[in-house]
Amino acid sequence: MLQVLGLCRFSYPALQGFQTAHDDIEARRAALYDPARLDLRLTWFEHVCLPGLANQTNPHWTLLLLLGDDFPEPWRSRLEALIAEVPQIVPVYRPPGNHRAVCGEVLRAARDRAATWVAEVRMDDDDAVATDFVERLRADWPRVRPFAEEEGLAAVDYQRGVVLEAGPGKMTLHPRVARYWGTALALILRRDDARSMMDFPHHRVWWRMPTITRHKPMIFVRGSHATNDSHINLRETITLEMKSPAVERVLKTRFAIDLPAFRSALDRLSAEAERS
Image (tube, rainbow, N blue to C red):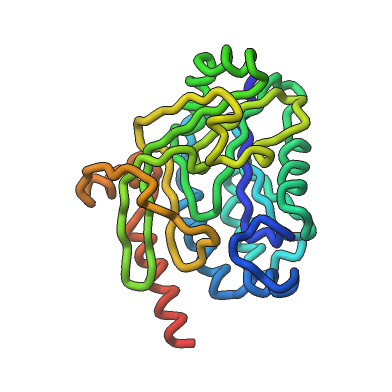
């Protein structure tokens, strides 16, 4: 049995793991829990991240949504209401701690004891995977299994997707091929392995284990906006020659993303910010 287990950190105030520096944990909390920031992150989650998860063609998966135990209202209730109809998404609340240690503990605690192998996936709350991501990962597992059994672990990297760049009055779609970005990278380990995907930097898994890369079809969306912690370097990717209408169709058909509704939601946030 292969368990598909994902992790999404939603503004979790870890003590490490951020490229943006803060003076102390209180400053980090203040930055992460800023009301305008949480409104924006929740909008991305609702309109970009959640649709692909809610419409997975294979229901056998779990996503752990990691939040701080002091995640504030009303955003906490709003987030819990959004995921209420998707039982595979499980909120997990933890106090601030070592980033890698907390994430690893949460993942290991959620492993299915009936599983022999676990495919671990990480994503941000402004990213997305295609609605057939789990189905394709499970279909690829028989091809990957001989490598995993030989080495004890392996990875599958789905490399084609879209960088969705959005800001006030602006939205740009960048269809790309990107290697080992992490959003649609599955690291497969034995269920009883003491390690987790957090022990392997996603951009360097290719020299730590056997990997299989899949260059078709579109599998991931990466969000790009003002509150990104890490810079998205498009120069490290390969441009796909696609017109914007074709990319918009892909977002609708493969990711269930309603782009006009997302634009409208972002416009409402901008208008509210100008009035306040």
